[in-house]
Length: 337
Image (cartoon, rainbow, N blue to C red):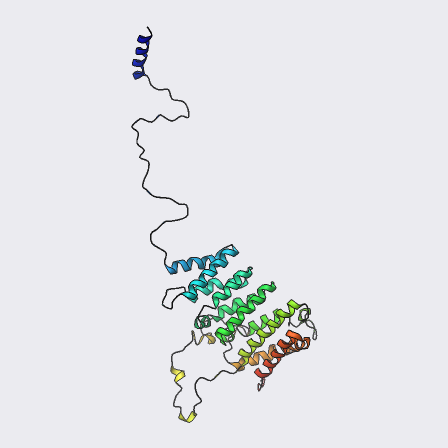
């Protein structure tokens, strides 16, 4: 009895459909083969795997982008360190980033809020060739003036290091460029507090005092030294090139007909640019710079340097040096009204 019932049930299984439950998948066949794969590869989010290594230019461009646009102070500092290492150790024939690409992206970092970033930026600037910096002195001095008048004392002090490097690298190129003379002197006057109060005839602004604190005095002496260096370059007579020659023996001046050695030699004429005001004019010769200094700055600078000299100490020595530079630079100058 039991054996016959079991046999009947086994025969019925071939004609019964399995009941499917809601939410349950259909059972897979015993001979099922998974064919859903597409290829044997690894997919990594926001990354790529390749057998070709990136070129030097690609790597430099990537780290330049990090240095100029990253939100992290540490990442900007590390990117600048990488650029310093690659640019300083690269051979002369190695492809790299020219100054025309580096400077526009890195100059805004002069006013960066991180001390480490500003320190690495100065080291990177020192790896550039003087000729590349001289051709772009107008852009460099523009961002330098912005840093000189910054609200942060640390940024102003670090900007003075940038200005010192610029003067040592380019010489008089930074005082010859448009706005390089008057606007930079205005920045010095504002930074040092030598701004005369126009509402009165004899009083200065209260920030003209130099004996505030030891740290302030040290910073002020640095400002005096840089102002003296800037004036020495701007007021000095041009150095003659080559040995002196007898005018009777000269039929023509070869330098007049030679190919110019500087970028945009007639840029100071502003032939195709917008009209400039007095502050934005390019003063190419020392006589014109002396005339402007005599008219607008000499009286205030001499008074401030005398006050600094009387303060004594490091500030007094810097003030005495500034007085000497003004006296030597303006020697023999006659103002023509």
